Amino acid sequence: MQKLKLYFDTSVVSAYYDKKAEERRKATIKFWKEVLPMHQVCVSEVTVEEINDTKQAALRKKLKKLIRKFSVLKLNAKVRDLAKVDVDEGVFAEKYIDDSLHTAVASFHEIPYLVSWNFEHMVKVKTRKMVKSVNILQGYKEIEIVSPQEL
Image: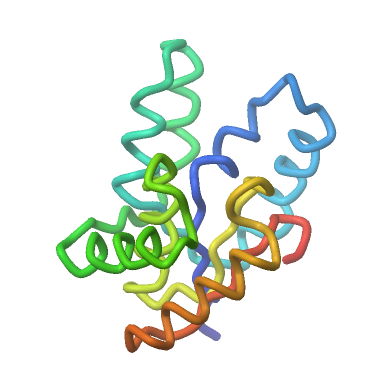
């Protein structure tokens, strides 16, 4: 049986070592051990760039190690165009273009689930509905934006 594909934004990876949010960290570690083995996980160049921007060298190294076996999806003109449409349609503010790129990468590559701990901009009803709407209008399949706890 083929494994279901998941796309992780950076919040899922960084939560693994986030000592400021202990409950989320514990839930992420549990998710990593129990759910992850049943899925094929992808990240994107955006995720890699955000991890590379981590100021603490030791933490950056740990985060890179967490994603080393994941497929890294490339950005291209169509992904950037879809992200721009999301911004133009008010799904995301321009200053949150990386969030828009995450949804665009998952949509373009037909990853059914985008997994995120970002409840402010991503994992909320309004964003889910708007991303689905833009995807349909732009000829892409719908994706589900979920927290790790929903899988």
